[in-house]
Amino acid sequence: PIFPSRWCQAQVRLRRVDNNGAAGMHAGTRRTKGTDRPRTSSTSIKGNATMHRDLSPEELEAATPEELIPMMFEGAVRFAGEAREALVDGDHALCQHKAGRVRAIVRELEASLNPDAGTISGHLAAIYDYVLRRLDPETVDAARLAEVAGDLEALGETWSTAAAQRLDSIAAAS
Image (cartoon, rainbow, N blue to C red; front, side, top):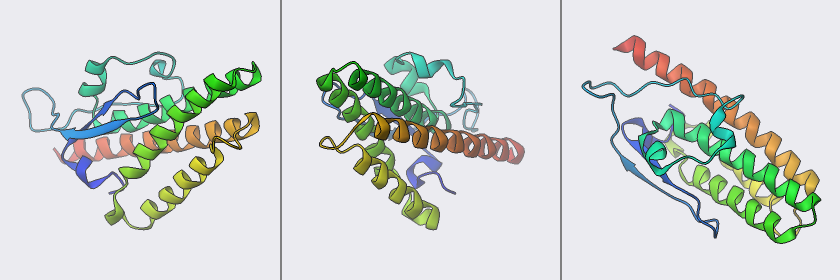
């Protein structure tokens, strides 16, 4: 499976990205109440209301891995858009802050890759590395931020599709 190995049987909890752009994750178990089955979801990055609001720590803790990865992409896309807006408005400090939040999320996504998943893991690592280079604080501009937001949105949609297929296969097996 392309999902990180520690997520196959464990729920990942994401701490909010703090003001310095740091983020953290750790594993814990999350199952549908009263069953042995993982919770199911139909998370989608396009049109998802979570993209335009901050989530509470409780919502993040309750999220399944299939919900959490798209949420991370949604946050990264949102922060990239906010960084671009700040840059256009001439607020370089806010732009750097928001771009730092995008970098922190992408680093977390990169760190969670499962090397045993085959070549897909290597390809994703290369994409994440490219995105991080495009977000270099010394060279970031509005065009790069727009490119990064588009790339991350496409990846988020792909993860949402993969998560939905995974949940469908889990439901069919039980």
